[in-house]
Length: 475
Image: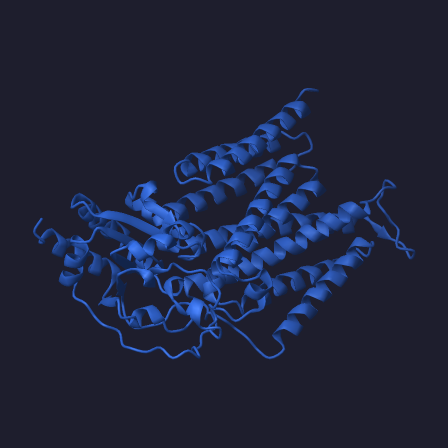
């Protein structure tokens, strides 16, 4: 079967094309579903080709693991609520990093079992040849990055799930974190130079996992979208490095594509918050606190009937969704309300902030699930110039991404973050459960503005009231 290696490589090449084309299609909401299918087919092809490798061992165990993993993913994917999708992404991403770390561990322990470390640092196996420095370096680097992504993603999952407080800090935390990372790097260098002992390998992984935990614990909930993107990039890089160790082209290409996409997304998310990656990892955004700028005025409530009338006779209405809408699962009612407005001749658009929700694209997915046409969903850069000519903005569940303090208060934790300029609209109606603050833990000056009114209540209930009241307004 001399043709088998060629066939396997051809399958890997086709799988790589499907990965890249699938990712390209995921860049647009119109083709994203098809892109996911294409990438999934590519992954299936790569897995089947891998099973055909002549030197594969333990095919039965691997098949059993695949079946268990697919069954668990299918069950959880079918049951997860849209509001819980960000933490599922964090969890699955962590599994990818953990898998890469496990491959690195298997390779390092394998090298350790077959190698003899000499006093001069040379490494030899039983047949006279051992792993070269490049191979060891990639195995160690992939294992380090994968372990950090694994443990860090688990903390991100726990934070999004509400199992952990938003931040965990202590004096000298940065120094301790750097010391843990430095110790892991030192041991990694020792492994690369041939000191492949089991105690050192175990210590290396313990420190790498510990660093992932300690790096993520102090990060606030408002930064989780950026953190998820960063760990996604980490997982991709770890998979690519371990692919080089195993000389598996599919892993190299898939990991590189995921790593590049995650890196670009992380940069875009940080830019959308006007913050550097270092500030995300070591800053205080999401830590809570007040603001030095005095907020005058008071919050002015409005009834659903009055709000419905105000929007019924408006020419232009912009709806700004946030995570509160997702929690209330109000997207279907909001779209029903928007459809009623459109039927009356009102021009309706949905404005999306890049970091609205718990992960990139969260609001877009929710609105698409409710059936909102893509051409009604507008990004921040495009919608901001339109707010001064907008009659009414309906904010439902959004907070920090519409807070004017981001532009006016240099002491605010969100200062400099680009926001949706809803305060420039003629009238603003904010649907909010209570008077609490957003992720950043600060008051929202928009809620006290002269042109803002507060419609208090659960998002779905409030949207339902608006629908009922709008139906009763004379045409």
